[in-house]
Image (cartoon, rainbow, N blue to C red):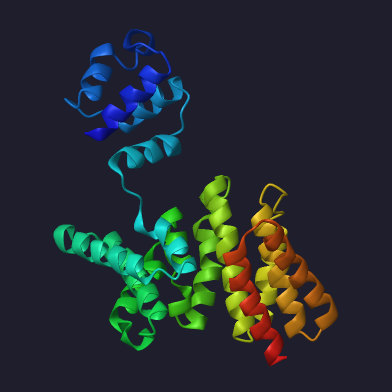
Length: 285
């Protein structure tokens, strides 16, 4: 049980003894056995002792994954796509399919479907994307009433392979389905990025009224200056929206300012991706 080992390393690194950590709620023997992987610990008690060593559950999970040498495959997907690394995508997809075969985990299957779709898209095999797999993914997203970070990332990385109308309906729903997590910074950041992505998809498909509705939602979220990248991407999306609406001068100004911000940030790959989209929209107008 690696979590006990990780917790012990944190406790020792902070110079805290088991005796100092123990209290009426969690005994010395409970902590000691947990650290030696001799016994489990309840979630409530784990949260309690994590708070006493001043580390969040998110940080603890991250450290656990680091020790195991693993990271969720969907977290590795964006960089692989940006690098056009088809080999990594194929490897990640294969690993998730194997995991699904061994455990019958629906989450492994969902991850594998999205990774496989990106791999086939990147290698020009879009026609080989399995329709039944996409239907499985769609059914899951519609049926889930509470969307966590996993669901947001899953949808954000799969909307390109879903029918546009399906993506629009799901996008309107996930704002409600994630409401409980809006105060969590990571979830809120993913929410913003997903909304920006669907806005761009709507603009590309000439769904201008829907795109405008999503832009209004984004503006109401009052995205503060600490979300610098998200503000730049929103500015870019608004720029494309204005270009499509026939307000070319103002739209090009906003889009180019956003692209310039990416350039100044040395985000060359990101800039290239969005510049290609910008040029594509301009050619059509």
